Length: 435
Image (tube, rainbow, N blue to C red; front, side):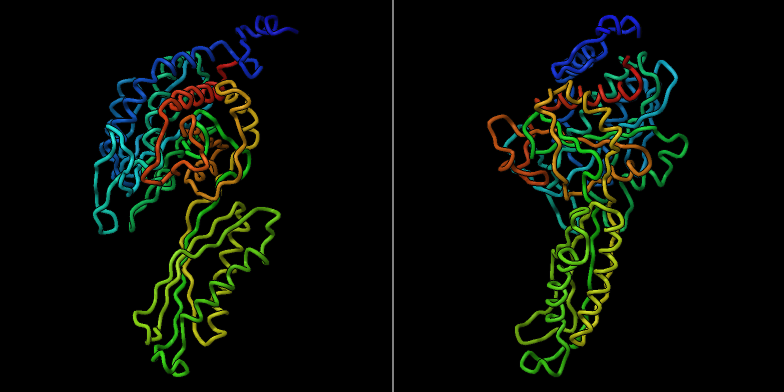
C-alpha cells in the first residue's frame, strides 16, 4: 500500500521526512511553530542567562516561568521543592499523561564569555562570595521548554492525553543541609496523584556540533556517589615515626589499593566504573606526623549492583589497609544520583522522530557519559528518555570547545530552535498525534 492510500485509510495526511520516515501532517506545524517562537526563546534565554540563580534560590526564574505558563492558560503550581514550577496541559482527547522536564539552576562560576548579556551576578556559596553563571546551559533548557509549552498549547486539540511540564530546581545539587532537585519533587508527591506514562528531558552539550542530537538506549549517564575516608593514627615527631602511627602512609596504601577494586574486583566487561580521589587533607608541618588524614573522592558506575558492590568494597578495603599499618579508617558514603537509564523501547520509538528534525547523519549515539544527572530519578518512576543537543558553533571543534561547567561555556543559539522542534514532536508522538 502506498503512503497516500495508507493515509486515507488512517484518516491522516502523511509526509516524508528528509530521513525517509513517514510523518503525520502536524510535523510541518511543529517545525513552523519552532521557527515562529525562536525569537521569544532566545529572548527568554538571554534574560535568564543575565540573571542566573543558584540551586534552591531560583526565585526570579520561577516567577518568570510561572507568569508565562499562566498566560497560556495552564494549571500552574509554584513553590515545588522550594522554587520549582509544575504546569499541566489538558489535551483535546483522552489519553495518558507524559512529563517534560527542564532544570533551572546555575553554578558558582564567574563568567568569562564576552557577551552583551553576560552574567555579572554574585552570590554566597559555602560561605564565600562567588560569581554565578549558567555554565551548564540550564537557561536554554528553561527557555526551550517555555517555547515547547506555548507550541503545544496551540496544538492541544490534536493531543490524545495530557502534558506535565516540570521546571526543576537544584539539579546541580542542593546547598549543604538542604534537600532539593528531582528527588525532593518526587518526595513531595510530584507523581503521587497521577504518574506519567513517559518522561522526557533534554540537555545541551558543547561536546556535539550545533544542532546535532545524541541519544543512547539503556544506561546513558553514570550514578554518582561521593565518599569521605577518615584515617586515624597517632601523632609523633617526624624524626621518630616509630613512636606513633602514620596516617599519611596508611592513606597512601588506601589510595593505591582502592584502585584494584576497579581493575581486579568488578566485572568491567559488564559496565565501566571509576573511583577517583579528589582531595587529601592532613598535616601542617614537615616534621610533624599528624594523627588524622581525610580523603574525599567520587564513585561513578553504570550498573546498580556494581555500584553497591564498589561501595562495600571501598569501606572494607580502606579499613583493612589502614589496620595493616596500625591505623584505622572509617568510610562514609554520600549517596548521589542513580544511573540514568533510557528506556530502550522508548528510544527506538522516538529515534525516527528525532531524525525527522535533524536528519539521520546528525542523529548520533553518544558513548557512555560518566557525568551524572538527577533526571535519573524520574526514569526510575516511569519509562524515560534523556537526549543531548549540540551547541558548539560551526567551525569550532567540539573536542576543544569549553565544556559544560566552564566559565567559557558558550551556546550557539541557533540550536535552540532545533531543541524546541524536537521536544514538541516527541511530545506529540507520545500522545498519539500521529497515524
